[in-house]
Image (tube, rainbow, N blue to C red; front, side):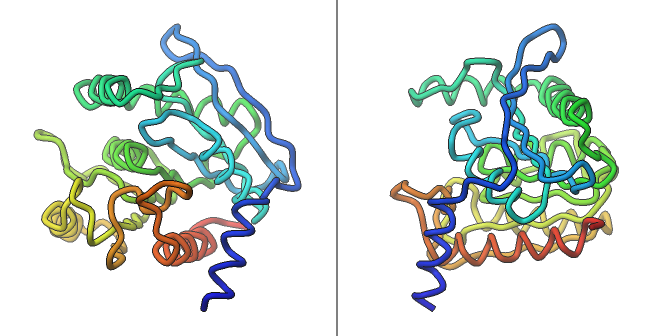
Length: 246
């Protein structure tokens, strides 16, 4: 087991992807944004990747490259704006709070990212959206909007459904990967979402990892948990194989 985990960490550290990634400037509602796109083939299935509250950083680029190595096109969206990559806690809270308070704007930014991916030749009809932390919250917002993707995946994302919303319009399959030791997004939130998805008959799979806190997959951080990261990534890539056409 230790050998497998070590190999996994080495792959994350050195992954450069056989394809070449590129920065993609795009506009949403007249404002500039800057995503990242990488594709090993014009026919590769698409992963729409949504960043955490740090904005689109090297972390998302590395994850995108890892997915490209597995044969997927990846468009890493930018929900904060070109050049906006917060480092101070107050700025991260302000930027995410603005989007939490304006779900219409959040949805518009997500749709804008999909359109930007399409403009690069990505197949948005054969696509899955995935996100980390804040990005996971955004992915569920995209799902509730009724966007017709094949799947929606969250890693330690916010799970609460905003007042006045529901998953009645959700399409595709949901995969929720969560830490049991997450004190930001509690197991009560996890159970409430499970109940709602079952009531709405939304296909879903929800997994928790013991001892894993919030942001357990962010390698290099004090919250990183190797075991939970390896297991959740393995399930995620299996989900992609099951869900997308190759």
